[in-house]
Length: 76
Image (cartoon, rainbow, N blue to C red):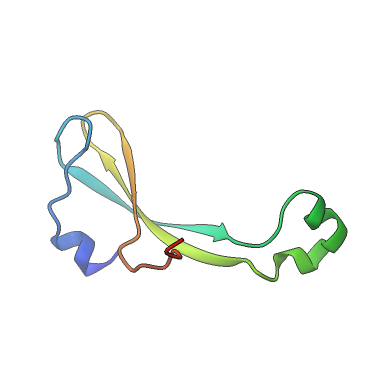
């Protein structure tokens, strides 16, 4: 969990209650899927990478929010 996330006062978009940090969630991004993955096999995974998103949950309504505080996702 980043220091930046701890220093923010994050509020739920649904009910304006404080969000509780659940830590980071590693997600696979990029690569190929569908027919390309079938024909390319393991080579389809060459473009994949792991990005880490911080997950926060509302204590009141259980709404989940995902944050990219370290800007690991591409801009487009």
